[in-house]
Image (cartoon, rainbow, N blue to C red; front, top):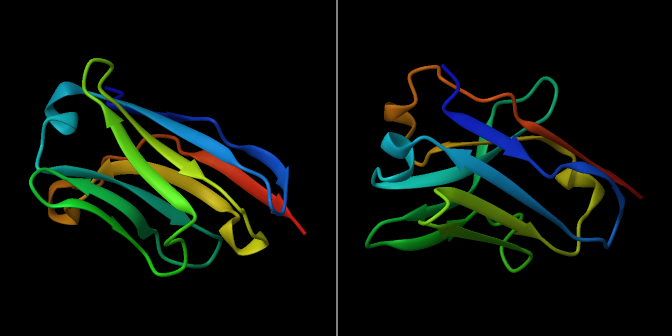
Length: 117
């Protein structure tokens, strides 16, 4: 049962912008919060941006000031606007609950972002 569908990735040059989209099932979208995670080969899947009900947004230091997370309740979709992309932003991006304890191994297919320098 697919509950998360990420899209919008691609191959771009450093300094460019991309906007990722995540269509989420209702039970996930209406939870306490959602986040975007990034994974590169050989490393853990790290939270880079989160939007939490009553707590606003949170960003990893590496993306602060460049990435913006937002949500559209009517579409049950979470977005990640990525500006001033750097080569180190390269990875597969996934969306999911912001609280890892709720994830329980259920992930979407992710969307690949590749930034060439």
